[in-house]
Image (cartoon, rainbow, N blue to C red; front, side, top):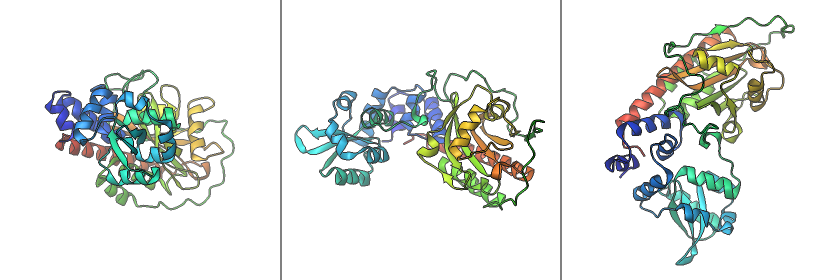
Length: 372
């Protein structure tokens, strides 16, 4: 029986709570149980008990995780432990030649086999909540948790939870963003010479079609970043969670995709003054200079994208679901120049297509309510 079905059957969660968690999973990733915990619908101990029932393997309790043998963790190594979301517990009491390993998904037999090869002995899989494994990987093996899996500084839930950000989005805002081009400040230095603009890698109609057919959030993200190639010099797709915009996918100044820790460790605050904040608050695409002196938020993004010189101006496209900003697409022009108006409008269309794809995936997840 699947996790969502079991929790519903035993009235641990309501149907509304399950749907909310499925929605958050589509938008922000993570396992279903992770999203249920983040939304406050279930606690980690209860989730662990039900994961044990679902997977049919023993539960790695908090006490067992605390008592884990450091030597077993050292035999596995941080890189492999992070890749498999696995935390070695130590030898089994009645089978000292076998190592117990806590896993987020012990049903992935190929991963269990890989762990056994690396450790050099048989492995007995246990199950533990994803958030609990990530915590112990950080505490015992130094594997830093990505911002996606950290609680917000104020202890608030993700955007689909009950608390609201300090700055709330206007309820009457239009769902379709409209670009606003700002004049450059008078103190702007002489414009750089116009260089030939690279041709877009994919046609707009093909990109929209691919996004419309996406079966997973990561496919949407990959398509959004791919369409920026040739339309922007560098770009970053950010998830909005709580009071932060968290890195997800990016295109650096050399035209190369940035994935994994290199972008996922990026987290910049919302609530101050930045091009991100303007797009978030207005729910409209913004094209212009930063409203903040010193541009601290923007400089953090430039550093992640490998930009040395400040761009002439920047563009941020909000991606909305149910009139709520869930992603922000940041971009600036090739060589730090301005993005062409035609390309800016195409990026807006891509943002709208991504929002529509999220809605479709959320609706599809509700048709399969039990969850995974």
